[in-house]
Length: 128
Picture 1 (spheres, rainbow, N blue to C red):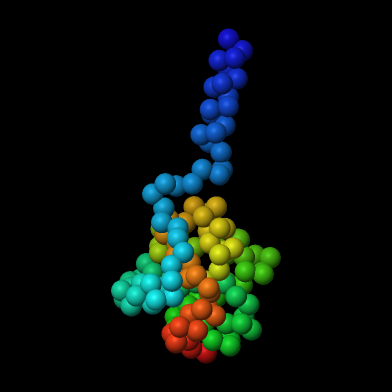
Picture 2: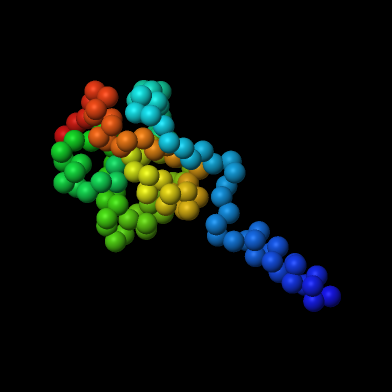
């Protein structure tokens, strides 16, 4: 009896734990060229968001056009992310932010491999 109760408790904790990832989510790294294509294909899509998580100073030096900025180093970063619509599609350039967005159960997030530096190195445009 105690063994069955213990097994039920362990299974229950495993099923309700906060670390369970949504298997229907799309969370992946993509190349800058793939990101460029994704942006082109979503130009008029209100459910597509480019999210720049660098500091305001870094963003001022150049960012992908139409990106919104939430500073990764802000104390409110996690709270600000949590306010976003988790059902929209996000393009980011920060692996650490990708991990946090996964934890917060965002449904569709793409991270640009190599970040903004690789984006620029491949001759893709930024704006100030």
